[in-house]
Image (cartoon, rainbow, N blue to C red; front, side):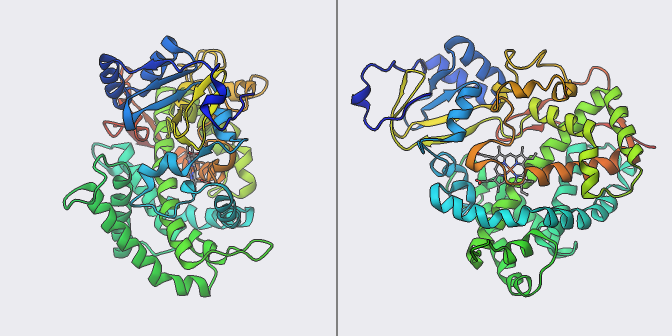
Length: 448
Ligand code: HEM
């Protein structure tokens, strides 16, 4: 197990980090990061092994590859890593007060309260308001010309965010909320980090201002009466020892939660659709599974019966993890497998690399959901080989909600439609900052 240490000088024997920052490689890396991060990680790993430093100056990154590294960073046993200082460039302006940018005791305190909104009875309530909205949202999909799946999934998950997350009726306000929300999300990944008029950041800051006003106006009524949406659940969440969120914490958490939930679920649904279009045998198998349940809306207990769909979702998340990499910053100098990492290093781990390692996964380029089924269960070879939801203290708090939302949506779509893509179609997709198709994923959708 790697040992932490306080001062570099104490560990003069530690090996120096391999570097990949000659000028040509710097350009190759920067271009590759945005265009094909998977190939870039593969090259770095092939040429350097489990650890390599890229970039220079403020853009210096220590890349760690493989499940051992994922475990070391995410488990954070010796409290070496800061999530806040890893994510702050994304979070700083539009998501202040986000739980992901908290460390240590503050993070544990906020997470314990938030956890209340993810308990079984709360999840059951979200399911009950979500499913009629899904039915309304998807019923006319086959009437659309030039159908782009990604756009429709995005609209559906945005509408669900208004009802399930905020508890507001769809209508004029929901449209404005959606717009403000989209602007906020775009700002989080905008390259220009100052709110100069006309930039995505300026729009995002304005969007956040609007959302804050809406939450402030709705807070008294949400505090007064419990309703089955996240906003109300946050207002009423209380731990056994009586800890509750303040109004400001509720607003900050809501704005971040909606962002954390939205693009990730949209990305996952899109890649599931793509995989099922390319693998019609699997599309038919999961359709038969939902038909066998023979229920318009799923109950909480139905969720675990959709086993094939669960393996399909896991495989889609393996091949296209919505967050291809995750950053942390070292709070103190440390040693990993004999290598010396200085204090303040920006460290990156990469699900997109671990999810394709041939030492773990058989034929990793093949869509093969049964790799998650017994007896194969390839992911069990290492607890940190499959990490689409992260791990450790910051592990995705919405994981079970994401699974239930995906199952509720797929349950309805599989019974209404079948779909395919031309045999030679390969989805062009970007992985950074989040996995999504570059062409919107045109599919042929037919009503059943
Ligand atoms: C398939 C969909 C999703 C994926 C792949 C995903 C992935 C992740 C990952 C990888 C992290 C950890 C990031 C890190 O440690 O640096 C995370 C954190 C988080 N996710 Fe998700 N997420 C998904 C859906 C959701 C949903 C639906 C919600 C809310 C309902 C949500 C709320 C959060 C929150 C609040 C955090 C921060 C937790 C903390 O810092 O304690 N996510 N997610």
